[in-house]
Image (cartoon, rainbow, N blue to C red; front, side, top):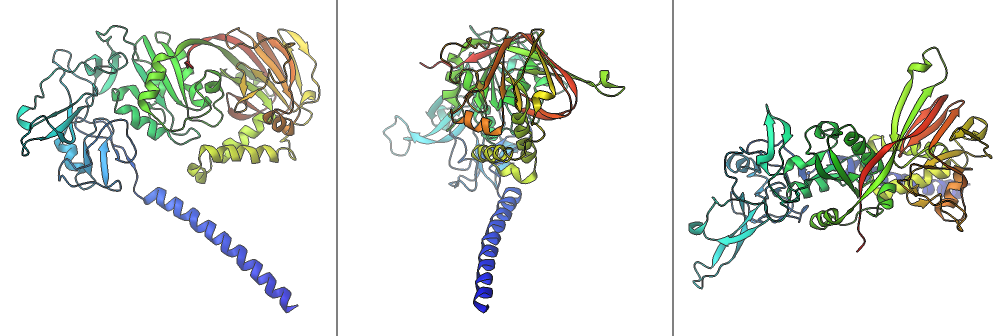
Length: 516
């Protein structure tokens, strides 16, 4: 008996130790994130203010490893550089640089010449053979990306800048019109084939790498072209965007849909949209050839890919949801727009479970890999608890192009606009031997499919099953009795009894990545 008790004590102490170590590590991560050195110290754009970042975090623009003020060699732990203009400083001298050196100005008087913005980024060997003079200073223009070596006596800071490398996609400061500190208009630049590029990044997307994206492109473009969607809504940006431009959205499918909806509300803007996949599923990005996710971020390579991309139209669908119970049912109308897919049932329930988990405080420390793991575990859990999606066919009445649709036993009904669904599953074309009509993202038709269970989803992910393929339709009407999870482009919610109508609502201008 004593031996048994000692064994229990050993087991208890073992699990207590493991649990204690895990909790200690978790507390350390939280405290480090809250109070540790932050690699991204952001300040507002002022007349001289800079936006600082650790020198180890960005290699897209050159910077000096020596502090501009005290000239000391900076280690990555204490070294900072401005992600907009590339001026460098140690943490002790950062405020001095803020007061002494002007950052990139996003606007400039149209009647004044615009000169290079030279920043010293180190030293190098000049052409002189004199050992006392062959070390020259290296200067970098944060607008045109030029570099030059010269001594102080030969330095000329009155040269006109022509924005050389990215002059076709950059917005010159003289073109930005501001009234009372607010941007009101962008005048066309006197450049042939000028098509400015805007970067929209969402810090709340699955990979948590949008800070890096914002930093990369602020140093290469005008800062007004780089929009942090968590701080500035795209609806306020599209008001002053030029009529012809390109947009790169860094985020997941929900972020892309947000940007597309904002652009649709500005009919004067004819923007073509590319995608930098930063979310979890990235289904629209997969469809347009931008990939399932991004690895190492190379800003110059990304800009080159966007400039080479080809136009591609994408159908847009209006989803109208009208409540069917209560006196005020007619007033409870909701309208959303779908670009990827809309669904009712167990797949939306898994997405809703994940959305709730992501909203928890501790989930801010997650990554894209952990997002996939969470989806797997949440989906497996719905194999035992269907979330009220069982027997969904008895609570749905479906009409495709005004014709009734007979449903088999299922737990999800999906309306597809693009081939990719559920992080890369080719749902409509799985097991297709040529007897299924071809799917297109610009034909004005939806593909209506069904899923029997969460276990069916797992088999689809592995390529071991096929969905129920019902029909292709230009209009879909669903009458839902009772409550069930619903999603549009990965944004889920619980839906009560309602009539759901999905109709064609025009097209969006997208960009398809070139493979050559």
